[in-house]
Image 1: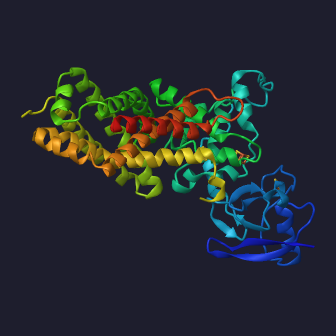
Image 2: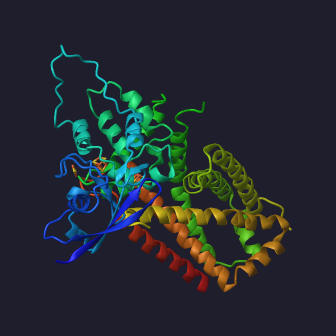
Length: 237
Length: 117
Length: 116
Ligand code: SF4
Ligand code: SF4
Ligand code: FES
C-alpha cells in the first residue's frame, strides 16, 4: 500500500511542521487523515471537528495553503502525495490545528450582528414573503454557518486588524435585508464604520474559498451601495 | 473622537474622484496619442496649450482630482502593506495632497498661462 | 503567493494597486517637467530632447500601459461595487485579461505615434 506524507503544524504561534506517514486509501478525506494520525501515531495531536459531513463548519483548516473544510476535502482531489495541514489563517493559534476563534466571533458581533425585534411572544409570527426582493437578497447570504474559511482567505483581514472581514459583513448584509430586524440603523453604522465594508478591495478570495459557494464579496458590494445611499441621504446612517 | 464614518467617507471620495476622472483619463490618453503624432518642441507645445482656455479648466480639475485620489490610495497601502499607524498615514496623505496640488497647479500654469520667453 | 490567493480577481487587485503605485511615483516628475515651461522654452526643449532617448521612450510606453490598466481595472471595481450582480459569478475576473489586452493595444497606439 502506498503512503501519503502529511505535514501537520505542531505548537501554537511558535511551532513547526511535523511529518507523518499515513496509508493511502481509496476514499479518504483530509479530516480522516488527521484522525488517523491522532489515533494511531500521536494522541496528543489537537484538532476540531464535529459533524464530519459538512454541516457544522468546525473542521476548517489550511490544506496545502488553502482554507477548507477538511471533512469535505478528499485527499484524491488534492492530486498531491504530500499534504500540508495548518491551522486557519488570520487567527491566533492555540495548539496544533486549533485556533482561537474569539477574535473572529467578536468581529461578528461588532458588525452590528445582533438581531433585534420590536415584536414579542404575544405577536403572531412575522410573515416574510419569500418572493420579496429583500428576502431574495437575504437568501443569497443567509446560509453562512460561521466557519471562518472566508475570514482566513481574506488578505485585507491579515493586513488591517480593524477590518471586520467577509463573514461578519456578509451576516450584516443578510440582517439589513431582514424586514423583521429593527436595529438596521445600528447594523449599517457598524458596517460603514472604520473596520467596515469600505476596506474590502473585492479581491474575491472569500468568494472563491467559501465551501458553500456564498459570495461575501457581493454582500459587501451591497453594503457599499447602501452606504452611499445613506451618506448621500444626508443622515449619518 | 473622529467621525465614525471617516473611513467610509474617504472610501466614497476615492470612488467619486475615480468616476469624475474616468472621462478625463480617456481625454488625457487621447491627448497623449495626439501629442505623439504632432511636433514636439517647446514652442509648438506651448502654442497649442496656451491658445485654449478649456485646457486650463480641464487640467486644473484633473490635477485637483488626482491630488485627492492618489494620496487616498497611498494611505491604504501605507496602512495595509507598511503597517503605518492611521494617524501618521493621514498626516502623510494630507502632505502628499498639498504637494501634488501645488506641483500640479504649477505645471498647468506653466503650460497654459505662465511666463513666456 | 500562497495557493488560496491564486485567483484572477486577486491578480486584478494586485495589478490595480501596483500600477497605481507606479503612477503615483511618476506623478511629481511629470508635474515638474510641465513646470519647466516656467523656466523658459529652452529648459522644456532640453527636456524634450532628453525624452527622445529610447530608454525614456520605453519608460513612457510603460506608463501609458500602466495608466490604461489602472483605468480599466478601476472601472472593474466600480462595476463590481455599483452595478447589479448577475446570478452567477460577478467578480468580472475576465476583465483582467481584457484590461491587459486593451492596455497593450493602447501602448501600441502610443508607440505607433512615437515611431511615425
Ligand atoms: S461565508 Fe462561507 S466561508 Fe464564510 S463563514 Fe460563512 S460559510 Fe464559512
Ligand atoms: S472580497 Fe473583500 S472581504 Fe472578500 S476576500 Fe476580498 S477583500 Fe476580503
Ligand atoms: S466536521 Fe462539520 S463541517 Fe467538517
